Image 1 (tube, rainbow, N blue to C red):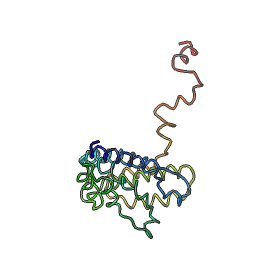
Image 2: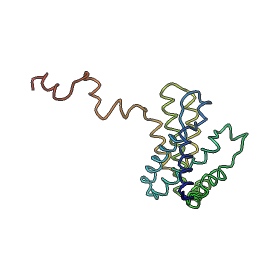
Image 3: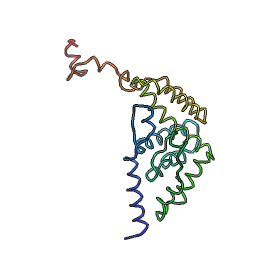
Image 4: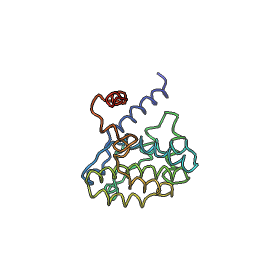
Length: 206
């Protein structure tokens, strides 16, 4: 068995742990839930969009987002309350996860760039991380949790780019159900089961 291939297999199993690693802040909010893998996926999509909007390096931004929480497979998710009292070694955890995979230099460089917010792409990736939270908070607010509004105020203050702030403001003003309930064709709500355009035309004698 090739040693590097074995370590890559180990790493991929480890990344799968993110599906089983809960984001812990929701216990304080009182509603909502997600795991780190779910969070990382949408963060990456948001990063792609922000980079496209600003003309930044799309691939770099996506990579920064994709790997931004991989270390949490080992240390778990530390919410803002946890961080006041507990410490962890995320870079060490990531280095151990990557050891022997051949990916060490590239991914650890991404981690350092993101932590130091050392580029426009890193700023966008940091904003993508917050905007994913803002999307979740808007949904919880729409569903009746008033405390989500306080959390959104804090998350909005953490945004680093004007593009991120503009997108987040739009999100905060958008009903989270609009994409399916109100558009693009709301008429399907008024059609009974089994009806379609052809049946409607026949019923009207056209």
